[in-house]
Length: 426
Image (cartoon, rainbow, N blue to C red):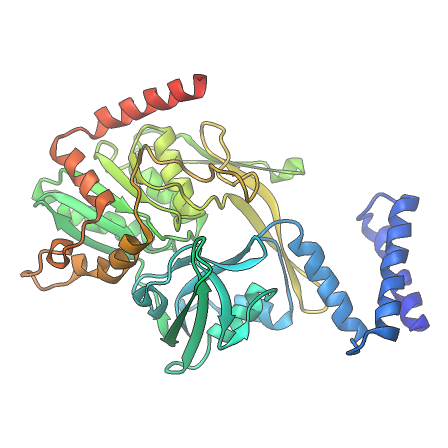
């Protein structure tokens, strides 16, 4: 172990000289010395034994995990998996997950997937995977277990809300191929578009839907971003541009260094610059969904209905490392046109993400039923009337339709902004 100690200290000293990672103070060197001492003690005395490499790897993971929920140290297998997932399909159950309050937490299930159909919800906590505890498990490890051969079963045990009762789900892996845009026409002239996630084709797909509906005297658009975990920033910018007549600042990123400050603008001359828009959001709406809904809210270009969004408004960059591993690191945060951040300031913050203009509360029981029945809207059978056939009310969607029928979209936007300004002054 003495040899390991010398090599480790030599590595630290070389790192300091090479990149000056830390201020070269006595306190820093002292703590690094304590770190190596602890490694020595564990190696010599720990009851189960532990390889020095495992200690270092887990120390790195602990250091990175301390920063925020989105920074991540990826071992070689996880990094290669991320690099090779370019065809948009894989064998899995359809969950987006993250670490939140030290728990494996669902960001959102992807519509049409096994997890979605089973009724797993945003912010469900994963307690066990295949009967083994998921406490302390990394997202890499969890994803590695949940993905695999199509047709094989995956058993999840989850905890929901404040309920301590555990709920078991037995899911069968499928090939997850995401169709990102689904659409239909409601009330004869209201275009309803559900966007599953933001990819390179999303903006073009939405534009095609709207162009095809122009001949039907299109009255308004309802853009459903509920349970949309995000995706490509470029896609979000293109979608915003579609509805803007002028070039405007949409988003600013700011980080620790000046070179992380960037400004992103919409393009001018959007084809649908005067189309009334209502955007539906909920706690499963994250990242690019929050950029679109937040920017359109700031521009008074869309009415936002639903519940507060997830609060994921940060920029991650992947830094490849010399041993085949990589570091995904948060380097900046997103700021909307008004200057407000999307990212939650801390996990206990009551208000995070985007606060809708009209809040629509949905119970967990209602949300489960909505999940199970949402696809009814897109069935080709014209005899289906949708959610009403199942004695189920989609409150947010119905509220949007009510306001559109009464031609009150712009009026409601103005009223909500006035109310918001008054509340801020109190």
